[in-house]
Length: 563
Image (tube, rainbow, N blue to C red; front, top):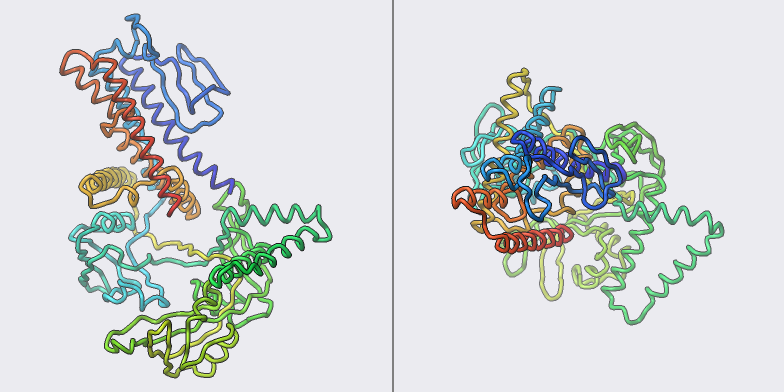
């Protein structure tokens, strides 16, 4: 978790430092002097004066500013180097310097990655066999190993180019060109969500979340103060009393029982596994997807298994250094009932996708309360399991709240370890070898593509084709995405930093009061009119700009939490 925080802080601090450095240096270029160069707002905890400029870092180094001479308020003295005494066109140069340096930072990060051998992920796709029935891409004819070479006529060579073109095609029909075994094929979609992943080495990654990890650590520490387990027993008794509360509905009781069971299973898993562990094998059997892991564990229900995992060596400080470790634990037994070839009695000609009933579903008991199979109700989960096992492969009649279906029964056993699984994919890279000069030119193309995509996205927001809540992230969303790229590796993380730096450049150049673009608009008016806007007007406009940005920040942060 500390590594995640450091990764977020480093990204923001680097982009902001370079931005403010751009203001400072471009101010020097036109002879404007700075009083303060600050990383963060508020009182400085470290200060050093060099010439007329005081450099400082505040207690919370998020954000920053440059205070130019003569920009402090009050009457101008007309001294050399004053910001507001400088002609308006010249005054734009230090203001434009911040976004310019963000552009330079983004370019040189990408160039540096190419220079050390980085090759971006390609456009070869993967479709998980377990979801073929539900994947719109598979149903349309796409297959694992296909390489998507264009979207609506626009060439796509890298993963970024493919995702950006699909995202910007929202609201339009999609035409894909695909290479498969030397042939070029075309596919059409009405939705950019084509239901595919990217090809590459796949591993199941353990994800407990910060809350569960900290809670487990805290309870372990408390156990030393309570060696007899009295506090834990008291907590269990309280939970039992709550579960027996007659005021609770059957739904509330089932969900409460499921939550308590999940917490107990997760706590058990935390005794053996670490957040971020990647499962390599089970008793020597390699596993690469969640269905593979669950089915393999299902062969060893209630038996101790040996797990080989890829584990962070220094989880607090370095997310990229890993080592192999072995863990022995007993998987918990579970099962899945598949309802195949489902047909509604009223509309038998309309096929319905396979429906899965999972024994570990938090609402499985609620579902069984309303389910009848060939007229039979079920007293509990074990009764349901025995009935299904006796009729595997047979057609049965299902009744749920008066509606009747026919389906073929399928059944298989799985094993659970008690963690939320997510996929880590080491995606296949493009076969691209660049010389120094080619890397420089390709970096320029990549930056141009990022700028173009950001501007196209803004255009779609203003035209109503994209919603702000779905396409703009606040600090919380930015932090979540940053952690994902950090987990993916060094290259992915710094590519994301470059993207954020470019996005920061564009956002600062928008003609919004308070932002750099707003100040450029003020100075442009002053250059044309020969006089500045009245101070009272400027203050009102800046106040409106501040409240607009504050409201936008709160709005997108709210939706970050909902996501």
